[in-house]
Image (tube, rainbow, N blue to C red; front, top):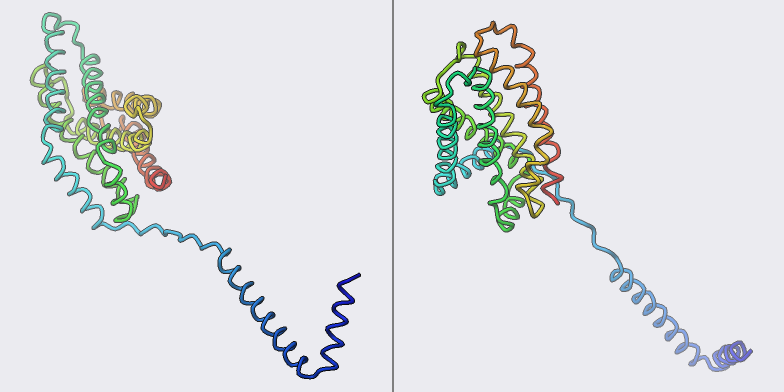
Length: 280
């Protein structure tokens, strides 16, 4: 009840005294402008900044070449890593030689073939497990701002494939020198080594990237890679058995196509899924 009476009294005063009308109008205008300024300031303060979306940079061959050269440089500086893998292969083959030295009749071609690929599988696991675990968080952040994640995963797959191919060839030479060479078709066996090295490297590189986010990365890598590596290993042993028997290449078409398809599928999945893992 009091507010309308006071407001009416102010209006009546303004009408009776014109000078008061001017001052009243100016004060009302100033209060209105001040209210608008305060409202605009509050909207600017409460306005949330837009999140900057980082568009993925297109993958280029220069990035891949640079990253591969970086891997080669780091490996050359730390020669003990590759030397350790070679020592692992040589020592494992020598232990197998001592085991079958007195039992030559038990070293059948099937045992020879299976034992060789099991040695290469464990060599691949030990060689590729350090792909992401040796990288520090600061260096990973630097890579994140420098190049695209697709270039990183492709470069690591290519480098690990080359390392596995070198280890496989050197391991085969020493293994055949010590345990004998029952291979009749060396060309088909070379293709088998190339496909198996690429498959092991691509699968284990992607799994190493996933396992690097956990604490116990070695155990997690072995568990996650087993369902994918096992069918690839069985197909590789079957293709190598055809090379040992000297069968025609047309007989091994299904095995070659299957191994090549698995390699391409794993590389494609790595290219598509690794950016989401990289951003986490």
